[in-house]
Image (cartoon, rainbow, N blue to C red; front, side, top):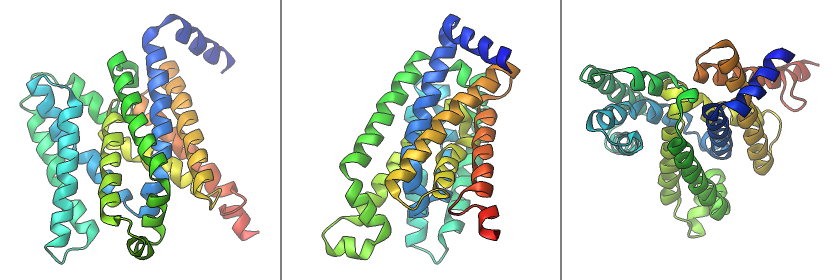
Length: 280
């Protein structure tokens, strides 16, 4: 293992692509850790899964048109969220049913559209993630979107907390709860899109939810929860990249399994909510 770590460090010194992958992975770990707690506390984890799958047709269409995949993915992600909201407001279906219908339909459309693409190499990277193929432009875009998300949460932290924990009181205080719900969905969509090249559409929900869920097992304070989620997301990205580079594994799967390992340890040994401590 020591030799493998030394080779990984040497690779970081020698290869620019590995440096870019490391920086981008850490950035995504940070921004996913920041927004993740709001997602699970607001109870929209399933919506995050829906959006991460629904962006696929946008990615394929962008590829066919020769434009940046961020454009198409963001458009279809937001479109899926709007469809889900429309179905909820105009039918008696529950939230999970509306989400299941929309995201499965969008994902199926993406699979069909893949058949029209001349090459599936880049599209497979979007499906399953390939952090070692990330370009400098992807890193810059990740930093920009991550900065926007963090700035939004920093500026409206109190309003978001009020909207999540006591929406009735927030409305009485004049806070536009519905606006912040949609704004959070937009932020969720942006983070999902920039995470595609790292973990892919299939695994992006794990990057958004697992660090926050793990942090939830250690604390009841939101600010501390965000800090722990950021640390876990960043560290898991680095460890997952190490295993991906060293053992030629799929980067997305390696990162997600690292996150799962952190969750399992926390689930068992967390002093506050760990399974072993609950039984003792």
